[in-house]
Amino acid sequence: MGLLTILPGVAAGVGSRARAASRHALQLVALWMAFAFSVATAAENEALEYAVKAAYLSKFRLYVEWPNTAFPSASTALTLCVAGEDPFGAALDKAVGEERANRPIVVRRLKTVGRDSGCHILYIGGSDPARTRQVIDAVRGSSVLTVSDARSVDTGTVINFVIKDNRVRFDIDEEAAAQNGLTISSKLLSLALNVRRTQSRESR
Image (tube, one colour):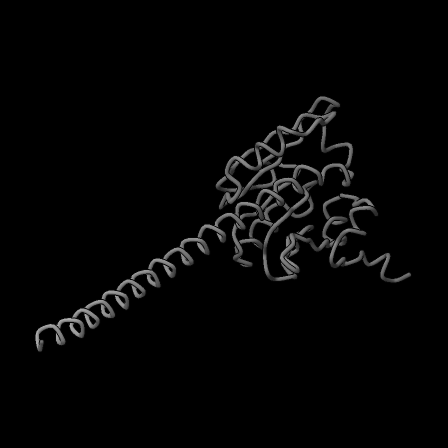
């Protein structure tokens, strides 16, 4: 009888420990799955972010007027350059490939950039303001639409991507555009989060 009375208790204890271990294992699996899901989601969000930015880069040309000297002929390709880090991968080539442009678009990836690099649109990879300024200074005064992700608003970039309410938005420095001989369409200016106006407009 004693054996019979003890065994259920032992069995119950073993069963409870097994159930606790099982719950603990399930909790670890759930935690791991949640972590894996968050990492995958972050990666997917980043991929989506740069897909949207790539689409913007391929569309900006529709709302920017370059001086006639920027294109020697009507068949001269528009060169879209990526300087430094390239966060786009195939997304940028895909976005450009889907464009039905009157003027062909060529994507170039450059380690260094100078005034003779032949860029019409220049995306400056990375978020280092000092490096961004160096690249901006290298092409300042030439017919280049500069675009970056720089967090500083004082880099001199014509268009700066920003994230607002989980959406890709952008600021425009109209003064920097004017210094490079570019005219930004009022339609694009109206879509910008913030616009730094030219001195002539500010004085009105």
